[in-house]
Length: 386
Image 1 (cartoon, rainbow, N blue to C red):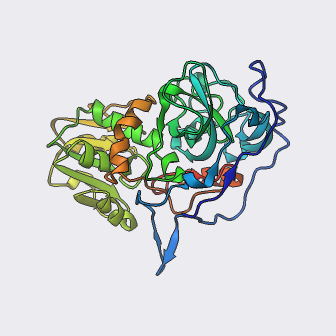
Image 2: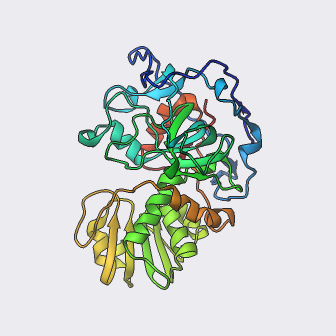
Image 3: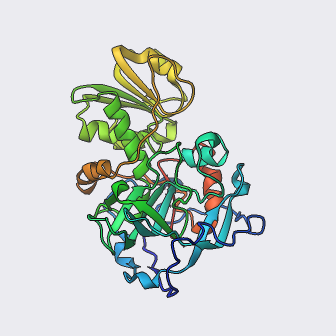
């Protein structure tokens, strides 16, 4: 991917801590960006087929990011996507006068280079867990990759200029960050951060945190270990593509099976699936073998429980849960990213970025509309920001 130069040149002083989170927002006035989707960056058309970027070997965009470390260069206001009411993609507004967040003593301020979308972003915007949500208005976005431009007084492991990535909300559903990653700057607790793997670019890094933490926590909760077998439902999705790789490369699975549509079978094989199952032609209930674990990332728990061994486990990320299946909500933890960084840097675990992206910052609404078709491969990423 060719890097786009991102330079911070603003010189206005930092806001005082009492400045409101959202300053001068007028939700009804900002346009919603539409238009035809155009794949850029990682999607290359060859002989009528789209080649997915799944390699972690591309040059980092790091060298193209020039970030002034002097905190006095941080502007008062910035561009950010905001919604002030729950609803469809039409409630998203691009605002240009949002106050840059002030950091707490245990936080760092990140200049956002890339951000990724997750199904939970869409469900949150639709109001599906409004009872536990943070107050409106909301700047959405969980996943971020960027550069540290300011550190809180108790931060020990990060400094200005560090290239980092994170899921910015410790709890995805319980009081998630009111101020997320779809903005020029975002504030993140130190405990949620990790240094960006050196061998991948910001686009690839942005797509990892929430998905890879979910994949890893699900495997931990099912007590997955070397020698066990696993079936991954929706193996070409953001979480599923990482479950395949972690199960094989980190946890030592004896066999990994994964479902995908016809056109994505080769992808799941390339990620390490020993058995690629075309869900458009085969029913998992008809499989001749059973599995120690089924990781249901699509919402088929009722079928998943029928293909586990006696004492086997099913983790379901979405849809109705059928016993003995169970559901969990990921807890963001920078320690998990640090644990997995060596596998990413060795190339054993590779990010998968949807070939229709990265979407430019001006077309976040389009990116959400595409995500919500449920046909994305890997992660939908927004880059560059701004």
